[in-house]
Image (tube, rainbow, N blue to C red; front, side, top):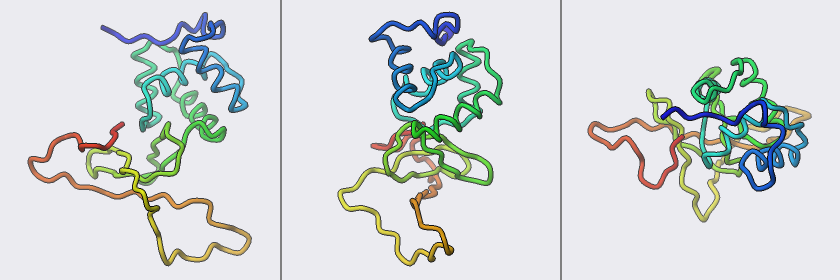
Length: 166
């Protein structure tokens, strides 16, 4: 059965308690106007729990859900959501970026050759990164993102136990 997204004709007329209304509230709390495109992409992004997604994957999901958007709209909306603090952008290789719906401080595993980004388990002690270079004059270090690259062993399962995949 084909998944469909929210009806763009009625997305701006959501009822309290419905998923579309929850997305509208989330957008307003972040200071964003709940346009039809933002509501539809927010529904696709946040309706499945915490996950990692690329712009291309979100565009494909929107197409399957019959949400008429361009890839440029998806990129622009992901940037707006990131700037508003609703998403965390994680650059992994060159220009490839993932967007994480879990904006808390945490680290990731990247499965090389497969493009799978997975949350690293939270530990009781914070990860310590020592000997960081000094920030240039006039700047301060805001955050350190740690991406631990994995290589799947022959015969290893496709899913990592206890880790959250995209």
